[in-house]
Amino acid sequence: MRDVAFGQFIPGKSVIHKLDPRIKLILLVLYIVLTFCTFNYAALSVPLILAVVFMLLSRISIKQYMKSMKAVLVIIIITSILNLFYGNGDVVFQFGFLKITDSAINNAIFIVVRILCLIIASATLTFTTSPTDLTDALERLMKPLKVFHVKVHSIAMMMTIALRFVPTLLEETDKIMLAQKARGADMESGGILKRAKSLIPVLIPLFLSAIQRALDLAMAMECRCYHGGEGRTRMKTLTLKSRDTLSLVFFGLVITTIILFDIFIVHTKR
Image (cartoon, rainbow, N blue to C red; front, top):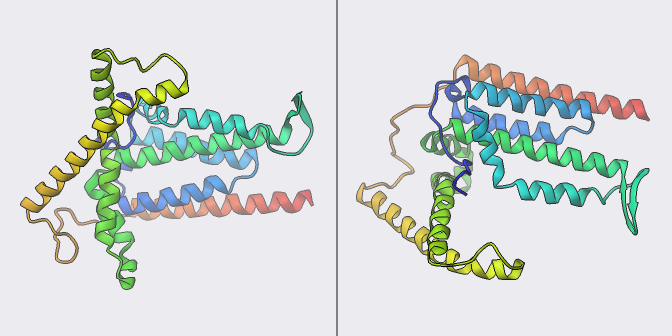
């Protein structure tokens, strides 16, 4: 768990670091739309290439991105295996009542690539955007919801704090597990039920530690007279620049092209 890097901010001077955080959030949403609008391998290669471009432009080591995938690696493997047994088409392999078809293999490949692309894109956002900038961006983008009396600032602050404490809680979990092992706890042998029971001495102090951290943070914010919302001043004002506009236009053109390409292929097959 000490190697999991998801949710961390890594300072830098790359092009992606310099983008407006509001634009980065919008681009992430557009990228998710682009990823799920791909229904053939030619279109699927576009978000995959863009994910590689994100990693290169962020100037963050590939090792950090690999660490961010460790937390969901098991989910990716289980999801891909389950998708192998769903789908109609020509049977490629059969073992008893279990059948693997060509369409099921395609579905599994699409699912894995999509999940990997989303992890890379979201990791790029957290690696290149500080929690403060992320909070300001979320608050600005959700500002229209104030018409419906939604506490936009509180929601943005809670989301950012939760994301910020992901690596902290993982590090705390690792420390507790090492402390339990030093006291003779066995967490690696036995079946699934035994391993699950051995995690109880880890979960209880972890929850207590998380609650204590939340209380300390709330107390610190109150001591500094933090109230947020209306009248709050910001040290850094968010301003859009030409590179932000160009990035948004570029993504809009890419998504439009991919959607039109998919529609053209569908009509051609008919």
